[in-house]
Amino acid sequence: MSQPDLFVVCKNCGSEVSPYVTECPYCGQRVRKRAPKLEREDRESEPRAKIRQPRMPSLSRLRPSEIEGIAPDTRPVATLALIAASLLVSVVLAAGLGFDEVGGLIVPLDEQPWRYATTIFVHDSLAYQFVALIAVGVFGTMLERRFGWFAPLVVFFAAGAAGAAVAMALDVGPVADSTPLYVVFGANGSALGLLAAWLVDDRMAARRADDRGNDLLGAAVFAAVLLLLPLAVTEANPVAGPVGAVVGGVFGLLLPLASRR
Image (cartoon, rainbow, N blue to C red; front, side, top):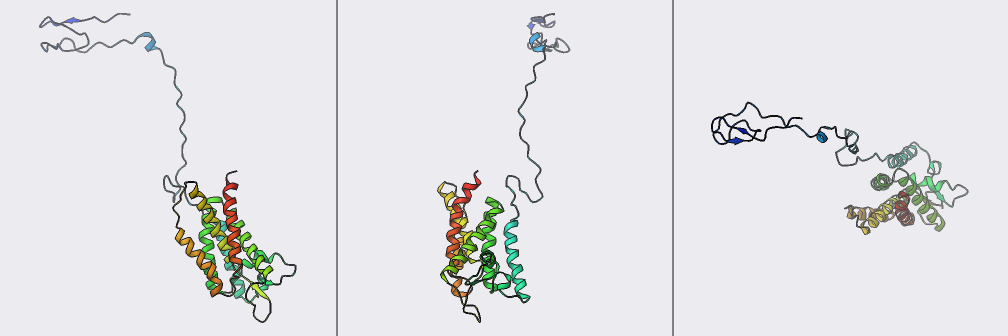
């Protein structure tokens, strides 16, 4: 392999200059048209082994309603189904059926334990139903988005049925028209159960230094209204609400544990 000259002599001034320049740095005379190409050493001319770059994970395309960097909110199907079921029962009641025919709980109860789970959908007052279902929608949605569709269903039925069962056992409730029996209607126990489950989970997260910045004042207002409903609405049982809140608080402790498995 030929080696390049160490220097060339400028024909104008006689100075020795680098063979890799085209003009003499001393007089400016053009030495050659172009500088010679640099020849690589043999080891450099050999093809290098290709280094395999780690493949970076790719993200799927954004949905039309999705913002980059923010997880999309899922539709609270289970919570909406609970609200729709309660509204459907009200429509059936308006059509002329009685409370006992749509699953209302009338104390004492004779061999119909399924009414514990159905009476929470029965409301005689639109104001009572509106307040209870708003709370169910708000706190059921937040539980469903955190723990999945099964969470609001379990808390709703467990808290509501437990409240109705305790109220029946204590014979606490308004007296039904034209009958000496007590009635236990509505979703105040279920609503307070959902609220308590969400609140306990939120406060436990705050203790782990995971403050989610939720509106606790709004939750306190909801809780106060639901607890005071029996003073304004006769069918809102004063026992079912607190019992439902206790049951919901227990689920607030258990749901995070179940979701980690």
